[in-house]
Every structure is written in C-alpha cells, then in structure tokens.
Image 1 (cartoon, rainbow, N blue to C red):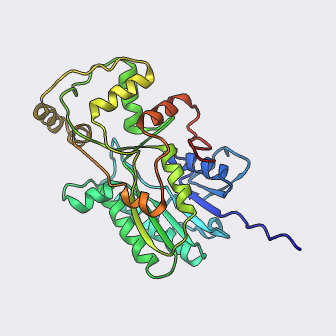
Image 2: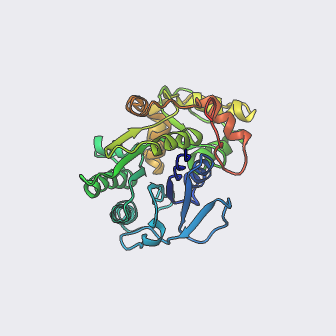
Image 3: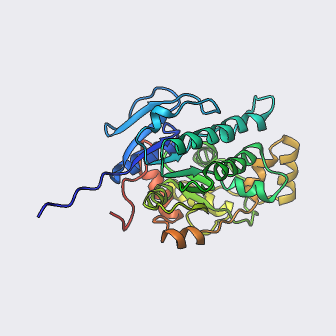
Length: 323
C-alpha cells in the first residue's frame, strides 16, 4: 500500500522581519517547521539559511507585494511606524496613517488577490485605548484604524483574520522603553516610583512567538481580535524590582506623590511617559486562551530570566513543555 503523501509545510511571509519582533518570529516559526519568507525594508544580512528574504521597501499605499506574496499561505504583518521619541513629521497622525493604515490596507488587498488564507496582524493594545478614550496618541489611532481597514478588506472573503493586541513587548535586545529602563537600573539611578500602585501587563517575546505559532495552526475563515500578555499585570515598582533581581542589581526606589509626578510630566512634555509608568493597563486573555487553548509558557519572572540569559535578540526555538 502506498504511503500517505507528506503534507507540505505552511508558507509564511513575515513583514518587518529585521525589527525586534519580526526577527524573533522568523527564527521561531522557521524552527517550528514552517517555510518562512522574510520581508525587509532594505537589504540586510540573512540570519538563517532556511529563511528566504525579499526586499520590499517602504510600507505605504503604493508598495508592490506581488513577488513577495507568490505562493504564500499566511502573512504575519509586523512592519509599522512605531512610537517616535523625537517626532519630526509636520502632521504625525497622517504620517502614522500613511504607513500603518494605508500600507496595511494595501498589503491585505494584495494578499487577498494572491490567495493568502490567513492574515495575522500585530496590532497594539493601544488600539483598545484609541477605541475607549479621546486622548489616544496618533500611533494608537493608526493601529485601531488599521484593524478596521483589515476587517473591511477581508469582509466575507473566507480569509482568516487574526489581530493580536500586545502591550509592551520585552526580551533579549528589546528596544525602546524596556532598554531605557534597563540602562537606568544598571547605572544605579534612583527612581521616584515607590509610591505607584498600578497594574500593567507586559509580554515576553517568547510568549508572543508561541501564540503566533498557535494562530498559524488555525484556519477558520473567522475575523478575531485578541489581547495577549504574560498574565496578570504587575505594578511599576514590582517590575523594577523584578528587573533588578534578574540583572543582579539593587532596585533604587524612593517615594514621590503621584500628583507631583504627573505635574512634572505635564511641565516637561513627558505626560504620556509618566502615564505609562503610573497608570494601569490590564488585559483580558480569556478569549485567546479559550479559542486557541493557549496558555503563556513563560510567566514574567521566567521571561525576564530568559531575556538576560540569551544574546542576539532571538526568541527560544522551543518553549517549556512544548516540542
């Protein structure tokens, strides 16, 4: 009797593959047996011989994805214009929309035409903030509008759409606020945050990779949006103590009234940064856990330990208790 035909591995395009998240996702899903094609804004050194690369240039309404999408089964869309510390655009919201909304809509349309079966969009918990409050940032507004654009493009086509809304993502070589906090702790600088009593969720890159791998196994034709995090939130002082413990450094915290911190933030133009440090942001993981039977393989302590045990910015090829 003839042996059953071997099922071909899923072919996956990852956009923004030279960024922190995209780079880790490419390495992880390639290690899980998927055929990975990495989309790069500019030519870059290929990390692995089993990952194909395409230079697709800037992400906007005119980007041509035809060659990159040829033969692709699923797209993981990570490329985006992210938070800008020193904004130079005359109209920041339009600058974010040009990349995050128009660019995403254009990619989704071409993916649909190319016969892609599953579109996974790395959104942001900021999209929920933009939906719930009038004080959202241009970045948060663009992420919500990108989700809405994707729902419009996909419609009743039968393509599966999965939007993931992470909070701050950390891991080895993570950029942005996580890297800045590490520098402050390593330098032994005191932080006036001992009086903060908030709860904020975070996401280890290994947990994100594991969840995306689980999403790739699903092909239901549904449109779904999930919040994703390591688990329950932790206070900012608690995070600093956990980071300091992982680094083997003391946590230098001193009390300061919350009203004074916020007033200083307003005076210095750092109000949004102070709010991220002092405000709460809890996520609802139940839908993701229930629909995909997914549990984060790393808790915060394990994620931090793994972050400082690794080098090179790559997520683990496997996760605890998983092959």
